[in-house]
Length: 119
Image (cartoon, rainbow, N blue to C red; front, side, top):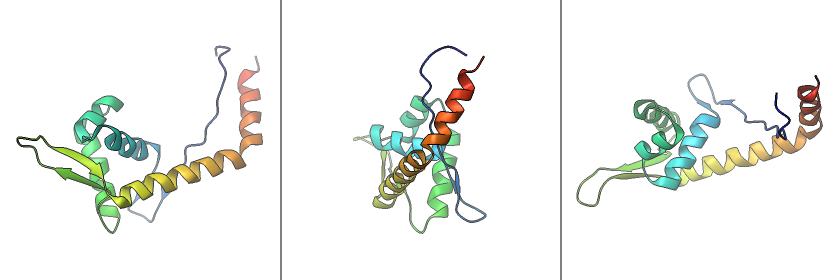
């Protein structure tokens, strides 16, 4: 392992019932769609096949009471995608959880860094 500065980070995966999970991959995809305005552009930026990205979004849209992302069909102005208010709230809630978990686990994360630096 190189001597680079290790920055430990807890990235939770949540199971919301038997059929729905939410973790870093789906959240990163939602963030990227919000940034670039397109599922395909977000998938390319993250190195994920478009079909996989679309299936992840579809899983979220079917798992929540209303869609987390809306798409606009192509045409003269082009297509696109954007987060719904629910999608924005989902990303914000995940971010808040991630922040709290990392703050609460600071001592344990530092201990893991010390172990990773041992030779």
